[in-house]
Amino acid sequence: MYFGKIVELADRESLYHNPLHPYTEALLSAVPVPDPLAEKKRIILGDNIPSPIDPPSGCPFHPRCRYRMDICHKETPVFNDRGNGHYVACHLAGL
Image (tube, rainbow, N blue to C red; front, side):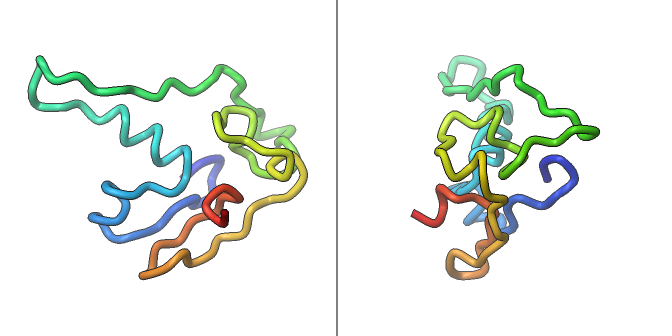
C-alpha cells in the first residue's frame, strides 16, 4: 500500500522475485539479510513525500519514483492484472 491504496498484489513468490511496482521494489530492498557480510543494494526513496491533504496529480508515488515518466504526472495508473494474478497499479509495468 502507498498513500492508502494497494499498488501491488500477488502471491508471495511472484511478489518477492518479480516486484512490478517501484514502491514494492524499494520496500523489499529494505528487508534485512540474515548474513551480516552479505552486500545488498538498498533503494533509498527521495524526500519528496507528498501531502495527503494536497496529493499530487497522476500517480501519488511519482514524486518519489526513480522511474517516473511524463504520464505518471498526468494519469493515475489503473490496478490491472499483469498475468497469473499479479496485479499492479503502475504505468511502467504496462510497458
